[in-house]
Image 1 (tube, rainbow, N blue to C red):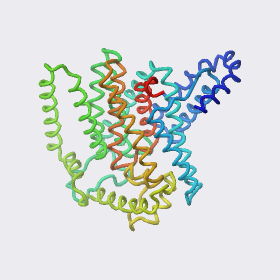
Image 2 (image 1 turned 120 degrees about the horizontal axis):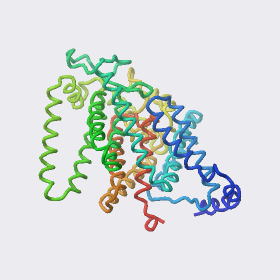
Image 3 (image 1 turned 180 degrees about the vertical axis):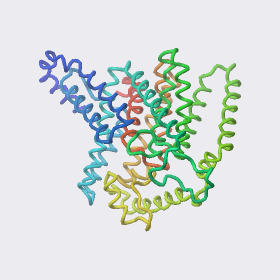
Image 4 (image 1 turned 30 degrees about the vertical axis):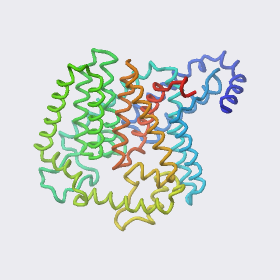
Length: 435
């Protein structure tokens, strides 16, 4: 690879500096701190602040790559799809009618993909840190769960119209919690909890003494997710549970499978009973199937129709990336009274912003990593298998939530997504096969 040849040449120039520098030899500690700061600040800081730590990690990784001997790039099939996606985004920006706004969106995309690259080069040399990353997510989940319970039982008020109450009785109106994530939004909070909850399942495999706390975190944080009233998160969580059940069943000894099936059936029966018996939750869940009878659903359908028209007119390279760019162009297509910040579907959003080939490249990237994750899960038996399962379940939840919402593009969820994908990529990568 030409890039590795050029990188090797530069590394030889900086080799004397690297050998004398204490900081360069220990730069991974700084990168690790930046990664953890991205995780922790996601719970309370602004988007810019979270992004700064991501950018710091990228800068430090570039310094590491050009100074540390034998550092090289290795592209998996998934990485190649991602590279194609990014190149199409760049071409889309160049052809955008709102170049400046699209350029700002492209910089955000570069930040996320650069952070993913930084993660790969950090984790491949520091796999022992993966358990601490999951522990950090579990700790954040716990703190947000406490806040969610406080908001729920103090009946925190809505900041904006977060649910259609026109057809509901007072007892059917749900208190929707939003945690401490900024901007305050229950859908963002639901998506974040959805992405982080699987991390709690890793704790018992790191240390058996954490088994009970991990179970409590998982149960309570699942309740906190329910309190968000985020129907997209409900869908994503349901798919996560299905995935966990199937993977667990596969690994069980034959003698335990019948007992496990009975236990799962009982749990689903209890969950169904709770949904049906709590009027506010029942109304919220059933509104998923209300189609246009629910104003929120109807709003999304109107946005989808407008975005499909946008895609038809710009199917090759899209309109250019970025939410500000989207808003300007969307105004030309929107149905009167149905202004929107996004397409409310991450796949439609990508197609509108960067065209059909960018969407196919992104799906190829996701598909390749999911395939590698599943293949690794069924071929290896180690703590790393648990890591990949937790990361895969997190990604599945994010992707299904993304069918009906675009909080995926918020840094709290976006950075979490790239961390989970990087964990899958690093652990499942086999250089002998993919070299």
